[in-house]
Amino acid sequence: MQPTPRQRIEKDSSGEIRIKLWPVLPAYRLIGPRSLERLPQSLSVLTLVLGILLCATWAVVRFTTEQLLYHEATSAAQNWAGFLANAVKDLRQIAAGEQPSTQRWRSLS
Image (cartoon, rainbow, N blue to C red; front, side):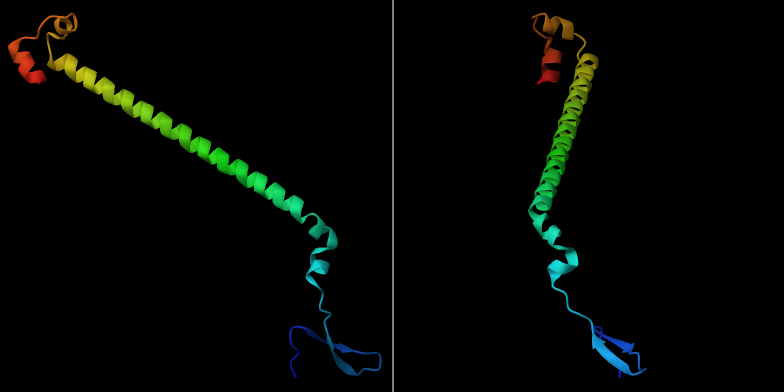
């Protein structure tokens, strides 16, 4: 006869083999009564830690996104300014308020 997981086989002092049941312990005895008393505090600490991690993750993502957008916009503006400076030879005169030549006016339009 095979014992079930809750059973154990023992020999008593007379040499007789007996099958005894392991005692079934309530859950609070397995983890301890103080553990149940500290459960609300543990959940509060866990909630606080998860909240801090969530806020930190959000802040890092926001900061990184802003930096990437700023550098992308700056790079695009510098490329466009370089293109205009090379493509339009009378850019200084146009910036000073003079009318662009007819050929430049067509290329800018």
